[in-house]
Length: 223
Image (tube, rainbow, N blue to C red; front, side, top):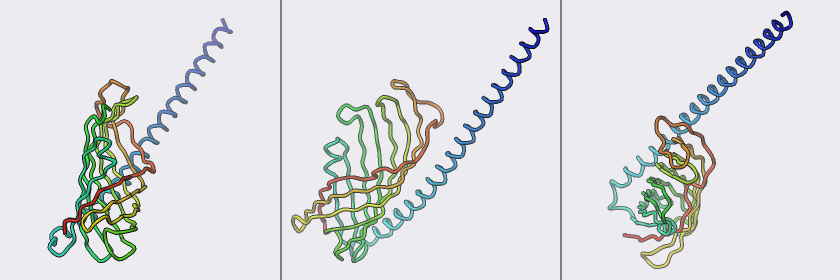
């Protein structure tokens, strides 16, 4: 009888220890999740503020088009991936341009996905003549996406990074732009198993270094 009581007491103590350990682990996971969410929120707000500045500069520059060179472009790589896109570049100084690109797709090449993105960019041209030769710039991105590949992902992302590239002049009006960029991208999404439509609040968030923009664009200089 005494042995049975001791055994029951030990079992109860082990149970209490497991419960406390599980509670501590759950508390730690919740704290880490809240901390990561706070970091993502702060980062996204900072990136959005910088993007807002770039967009504001672009809008202000667009109000004085008569005194500037204007060009339109499309990224041939995105076109091959069945992602229609169009971009506009405005010359805002002897060595500076402001640009913006809008792209979207829906089930390209049979892949179950949808995407809409807006990409503003500020470029500095090394040779003193915009829209020709080498440049470096600041590029941002806002993207909303739905993707069903292995798992289902519905979310949005915001990024900011450094761009670089080279533009070759073909004729007086036509140019080719080889561009690349890399930056910090924060994302927030609803994640579910494959075939299941995500519902409720976001359950996955984070940030990573990622190529914000890679492309080969055809440029047409309007004036």
